[in-house]
Structure formats: structure tokens, C-alpha cells
Image (cartoon, rainbow, N blue to C red; front, top):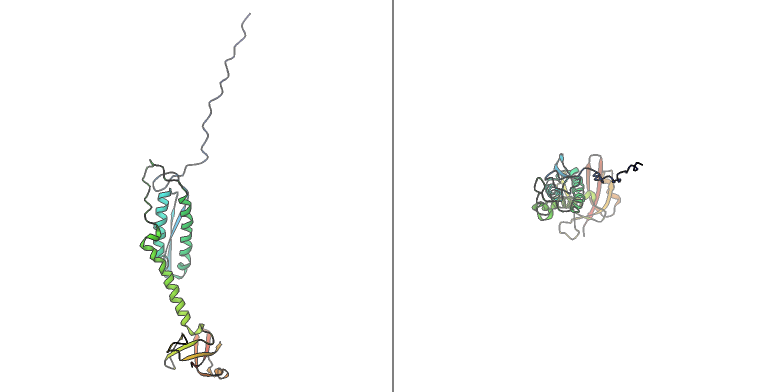
Length: 225
């Protein structure tokens, strides 16, 4: 009899390496990993004109923080010079801060990259550019002072100083205890410059009229006793 044919033992196939789920992101500046997609912005205001600066990642922790600090620092002193820039600059700085938090969650760059990770440098608030935060504060202070002394924003009972001439008066709101406070507002009428209407306000001895484009204002003034 012929011996039955012996089948060779079944050998399971060697396991194949699992496929990487996606492309590994490397820092665009130094090639390090880990890195994340991130976009950082800067803003420059030029009164009428403005310019928005953009730097796209991916970035590693060190390079991303370095770029974030540099662009935010420049924005702090270049970004406030214009009406729209006063609105855009805070949005840019907040956006960079959000990206900065994401970058800080990354591990330190792995050594051996083609390039050397950047040194982040000093934090923004330890740089001279941080004094740029005083710019909007100063502008707001000037605007606030201007409004507080403008008679068109004053209410009845406020005191004013009056200098200049009848044809070109200089009237400013001042504290009633100020020696320059010669008058107190006893009446305020909008949409008119007819000073004859001050006759209906008790104690009125003078009138101040103002017209800005189509807006008219009449202030009836009494003596500040």
C-alpha cells in the first residue's frame, strides 16, 4: 500500500504592519515632530490703510510659540493706528492667544530633526512692545476727556466755563466748584439755535448755540452762584 500523502503543516501568514492613519505633520520651520496645523496673524494699522499678516503652520511647540510671540508683539505697537484697527487688533491678539494655548499642549520637539527648533524668546508681556497696550488706553482717555468737556453732551445742572467772543465762544464743561465755572445749564433744547426760547427757563441770563451739520443745540445758561 502506498502511504497517504502527508500535508505540510499550515503556517499562519506573518502579520503585516498596520498602515499609518495619516501623514505625519512636521514643523515647517525645523522639521520637528510633533507638530500641529496652526495659523498665526499680525496686524498693522496705517490710519486709513491697514495690513493683515498671516503665517501658516504646521508648527512644533518651540517654533510656533516663537512665531506667535513675535507677531503678537509687533501687533501690540503697530496695530492700533486706525479706527478699524482698534477693532481688528484685539481680535488678532485673542486669536493668537488661542493658538498659543494649543501649541503649549504639544510635547517638546523630538531631537534629530533636519533643522533646529527656534528659541521662543521672552514672553510678550516682558518685551518693550507690551507698552503698546498703553496706546488704546491713552486714546480712550483722550476721547473720554473730550466728551466729558463737550457741552453738547452735558445735562441740565452741569456747569460750564465761557471764554472767547460772542461770535466765537469757547464753552467747556467744568466742575461747579471750579473758579472758571461762570454758568450753570438751566435749559437744553435740541434741533434749534433760536436763543429766544431761553425765555421760558427761569434764571437764564445767556445762551449758547451749536450746529454740527444738521444737528442743532441750544443751551440756556444761568449764573453759577
